[in-house]
Structure formats: structure tokens, C-alpha cells
Length: 365
Image (cartoon, rainbow, N blue to C red; front, side):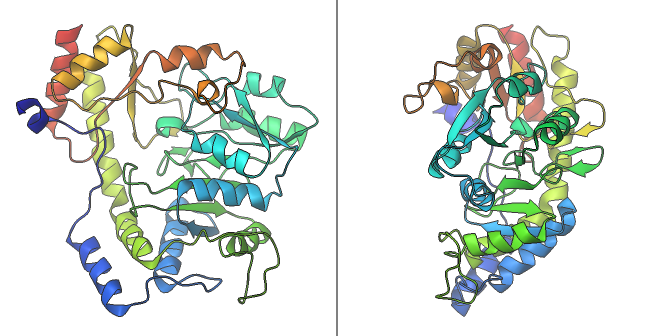
């Protein structure tokens, strides 16, 4: 029982009186959602604020990060018989979104340095059926933008950035999600900010934006005038109001994560573990502070026994799950799946917590 009370969670939603007040106000008002093409008032407020933060022309709010990926794929007319290149070392939603269109996910290996898609393996797997690429900015780390740009131009392939974990991460001061056709974000409770459940797509392309507005609302513009395939992917007003407040708090959330990450790196940099590093011109959001170590499972068990909510993301790569069962050889993916551990550094983690985590790691080693 004592260990449970001491537990330092890997990630927790951080909500306050402002969010509770906003939700109460909407419940009293009764306008819980809107089927209007532009969305309700709170949806529109959130989209404007977020567009300003990530420096994108357009933001389209939807009801989950998975819905964001689906809508982006629908907007590119990805369909049965198409192939979409994705990493296997990610949450299964990336692959599931592809399958939901009728297309086939083609699994690509990752780079050992930051667990993002390997451009060389990616290029080898491009075929006549390839219609899109979805790199994942895993743990908040930014994928190799230069190489992805070269490949996109060389093969004339659109790129959808899976930025579910990288809100606030930048490369050369440009936000993830804004480098290519579309970027997809998640506002799940464990992310750097939350709306309860929710997501959004960013784009600078007005045609894609207009199409996405229809896709999230049954393909309609004015109501009962379905023009293209769409679903109910709308973000409710309650969630949008929470997200608007959270977005205002995001800069401080990110500062706290950075401070904790830097302290933890300083305290364990001399130990026999691979600690995360940022590449030149990269500024990560520290969504998950991920180390790599031998005998990962025993290491993880000892951390948990001490009340530290460390976790392994992802011990079973997508291509090895029972549903996908792919025989694709992905050596770095397999290595990462058996070696990585993510440690708590969210804003509620204190300096004493970080010192305790570092001391525990030192004691284990």
C-alpha cells in the first residue's frame, strides 16, 4: 500500500478550476455540440488559438487523434489497394487508421538515435502502389525532415505527420505537423495537454481544409447535402472549451517538462543507460523521457516496485501484434521494443521526485 501511495505516474491530465468552470457553463447553456460546417463557438476559438500556436493557416478539430489520421487519409483519397508507409514502432492507431480506408500499411524500420522512421528503409519500400507516408514524431522526437522532404519530392508522395505525441516540438523553430500536407495531433488525457478525448489536423492548404471540414461532419456543408464521404468526427463543445484553456497553459507545461528532463539527464548521464538527446536545431516537447537499457523488463519491474510509474512504449511493435502478424524484418524496431523505458517528467513531477527517480536508477545499476 505504501508503494501505491508513493507512485509517480508516467503521465496525468492536469486540469484546474478554469476547465471545470468552462464545462459547467456549457452544461448550463445547453449547446453541447454543433453540426455547423465551421463547428461551435468553442471549437472555433480553439482552432484559432491553436493555429496561432503552431503557426499554421488552418486547424480542424476532431474527436480523437485517430480520427485526425483517418480524416487526413480520407482527404487524400487513400483507398482499397493503396499502400501507406508507416513505422511499426508506434501506437497501433497509426496502422488502424490506414486499414480503415481499405489501404495496406507497409511497415518501416526506425532510427536507433531517436526512434523515428528510417528514411533509407522507407525509400526501399516505395512501390507503384505507395500513395502516402506517415512518419511518427515518437516520444516528441522530430523525424528526419530533410530526408523526408527529399523522398516526398522525388517520388511525388504526400506526407501526413503523425504528431500525436509531439505538440510543441519544433525543428528549426518550425512546429511538427506543419512541414508537409497535414499534421495530426492527439489530445488524449496522457498527452502534453488534453481535451479529455480529442484531436486536430493542421494544414496550410485551403482545399484540404475545406474537405476536412466536410469529412468531420458526414461530408456535409449546409446539412443534408452530403458531397463526399464523411463521418461524425466532430469535437464536442465541452472538449473544445477544455482544450482552449489547456492550450493557454501549454507553454508552462512544456517549460516544466524541459526543466525536469534536463535535471534527470544531468543526474543519470554517467550511468550505463542510453539517455535521450536532441539533434541540432531540434526542440522536443519531452512528452516521454525515454531511456534504453539492457535487461529492460527486470529494470522496469524494480522501478515500479519503488513506486515509479515507468513504462515501456511499445513492447510489442504493431507488425507483431496478432491482428497484423507481419513477417517484415525490422531489427532496430525489435531492439527498441525490448530495451526502452519511459520515465515520468510531467509538470506534476517535482525536483525531489526527479532526484528519487535518478537515485533509484543508480541503485538498480
